Image 1 (cartoon, rainbow, N blue to C red):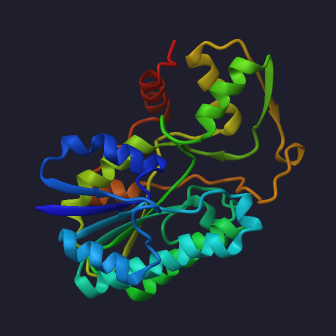
Image 2: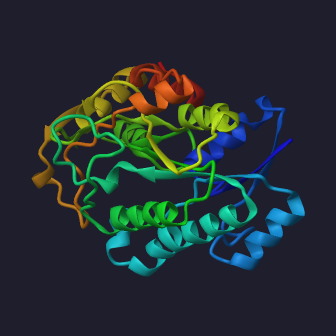
Length: 289
């Protein structure tokens, strides 16, 4: 039996893992959040692992408030870096498989072609830096049979995200300005969660590997918003604006396309097109008209 500890269970990916868990009878799931397990507490995590015979960890816990992180460096570092260090050390000591979720924000967004796993990292802000520090400490500790999955533009029927924001604004306003000069690909958290659960038995690597995952396709936030409004049949005009017209405390990468060839080839993963996944999500939310 594969016994899986899932951290950050109330987040978007964690919630989708919970939704899918009933379809994976070969797995025994243990869902935790900050209230039930402090992943920075070495003794608490060890005890939980021993008591529940955990042999796999999926770490979806993260400090994801990108702008807030600029002024809350200590907490961002604690969750995105130090907690990862703790999980990595325990995973190595107890020979536990660790799957850690990271982000496109480890890059500066100045590329001209999709980022590969070996491209140079250069985060713009605190969020990206602390997530990169988490990656680095994992690579230094090197637990066996463990991987990092970088993803981008995550949304779900759970939690707060761009899709939900656009649906709300689309119902409240006649028009909304959305940035058109930042390019990437959304990730439906359920697609990512399913991929993680499917590949667990296939992860057999002696050195820590990094993979990229998002849905297929390329678009701007403006394109994404237009399609959300169109699918939901809302009467709201989406107006293209430049990044400079919408300043934020933390800089966003202008270009965050991820090259997914490695994860597709290694694990024979089929990744859905972003519009198909958006359609699925909106139907689940009862918003597809």
